Length: 266
Length: 332
Picture (cartoon, rainbow over the protein chains, first blue to last red):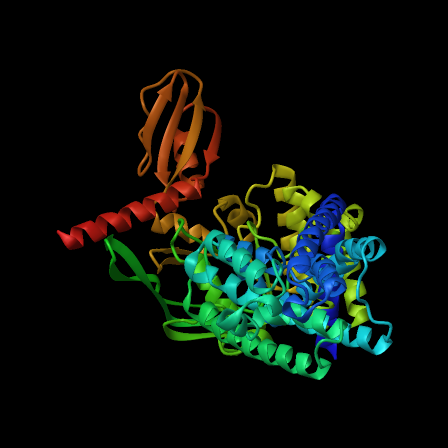
């Protein structure tokens, strides 16, 4: 029970940490709103040409856009979450301090990232979403159970997103610098999460592949659950499976990293 | 009163080694593997309640030793125990009993008020509420942190942050405290505060302290025992005073005579400088200054005198130079 309180405290700290940057949050809200408007008109033009692309009608496509804007920072689709701090700490050697602690490194960073995600959803994600709901026709459910299921998929999506970024961050133990992997993370995140286009709309084999990759757990799954396009239990299973696999991989890499690699600044 | 350190070997190292594999790029796609002995067969014990200085030049193996003592690095060979525990096998269990402070790194939460980091320590080390309050109050008072608790860590000065870090390392009553360069970059007043606090911690609470530093004043003011390492090897382990003998250092006697006189002739001492009636005499640090002074006073018209202690830095530099010379001779 004691460790539960520790990770709760870490999560609260993660939340408060991001809450201190008010100007950045305001700028983020603005950016996501503007981007949402641009994407909505692009999608509407596209769906005009190709109605029911990916099985969505126009209202669903619009909903998908605003959900994407809401979750962009929440799930750190382009990076910029806990992994950014972790990479920096590995690069500078500060990670040594973390290793002295009687705490689990992965859980520690996961807790901090969940706190961050919660803040970014409330502080940065909700406003663009409400803006979208106010000015554009959206396909939102009235059943509370769907909203509740949506929140569960969001939590699972956060864990999967963290697990991917944690693995990427650990690579800095060997690479000594995170610039390259960060860029790779950004591009793959944008593309495979379906920030550009819903994964449902990806054609042929490419579509079959992207829909089973872990990034599909991030925006596509919560969106489909919210709009009643998929069975929540199926979504949970998909997300939980990826979460377990990626977190386990993270633990393996973590133990190899801390055992074999010289901590910087010796 | 300082409790006598009982001969209970709290920290034990027996021929501990740490070898790193270093890959060096020697050409396109070509890598040469080389082994570096960061710590080469080091043995020592530290008793409970001791305060020991651990010094050596950059890259000597000090930090590697501390990383092994805390369990984040596994020794390549030898036996290592802290409080009877093998650190690398039971790192988490040991973590509850040790405190670590790095002068150049921080354990504090950068963007949040100082007190938030302490609340986190409270949870992390599962410190009982009463004891946490008691320790926090005591540390806040002794380290003068009262006004800083609500200040975000990033706004603290280096000296304030250092004191904040020391408090964070002590909230869970560790039996041993490892300090790596605790006074680096601090101004004179902050240095004095930190040293004063460490002295109290060691005398009143009998906390074992292992201090790594470049600042020899830290050692002079805090440690009765000093260990010197270089290239991963122990060069000296003993009382601070003994370091002078090993380094064959000299003290300087400055005498003021009534008038200008030819250089004084007095046994092991030799005159190194004459300026009017003032003369500088160098003599081995191990020799008694009193005997020398008595002799000079008996034979010369003495007006005033002072004795200058040798600079340990110079002593250690000399020790390294001699070691290097010996090594060179061994090669040629």
